[in-house]
Length: 368
Image (cartoon, rainbow, N blue to C red; front, top):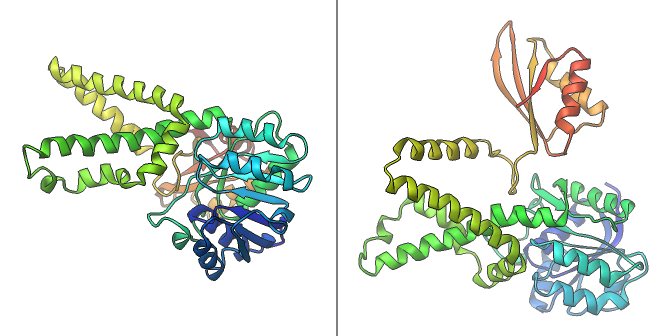
């Protein structure tokens, strides 16, 4: 694959930064990858792991020659870093980040960079249980959702270059407004962490009088509370950086929990069961094979005849019209009659477009 950027400088060579460097170098997406990190040992290991070509503990002249800078330091330090390095960036440099909260940082970055450089906010929905560059993996982003958060000030050509890079490392790119991103991650990432921590703390309180409590905390409890094992300092920073949106979702959760409580108190067994059934139904719609926090935006069902090559024909028809299938599943097949396919799309409007295109080719399709 040909290089998309000449030099990429990654500031913060940890799990995400290191994995980005590995993926870029593996596929030749840049001619040179420079790492900047305050811990010399991280840089030495990153070179050894082939995540970077060379590392420095400061943003020096060589690091500043980048045409792409990736901010992968802790979320609370990225803005200060950008203010420090701004005067050393080459005109036209593209800057992106990998932070899990977007709105405030995106708008601050655009103001800091002005018209001299270009900024595109980014958030790869990927991670690993092993922190730091020692956990870096060139395939970390494979099939993971990568959210890009442009604004009205974002340069279209720059957005396409960053989108090209994130696609090239194996991600499934989604583009959305920074504020919408922050609300959604508050709901599906930040709130679950608080809930998991609250569950653990609740059982810890009971354990004071009932020492066997944690011994009974088997698979279900461990699975539900696994994310409570995350780094407390990191998660404190994440939650406070997205405080307003997270508070909204805490309120929504409290209302939902109060509903269950009221149904229990009032002996509303049928309503309680229906509430559980609703959760089960919604939970079943989350794709099992997709890394990240969001399911596909749209899914359709396609009825296909029992003829050789029909499935391939569906893919070809849509591909020729520029519609990308992000997931495909054979639902039902009856020999001699045909069957049905489930197609998943991560782009807004793709499902409706696919239904129309397939209909024009004599294939029946409907929204799921």
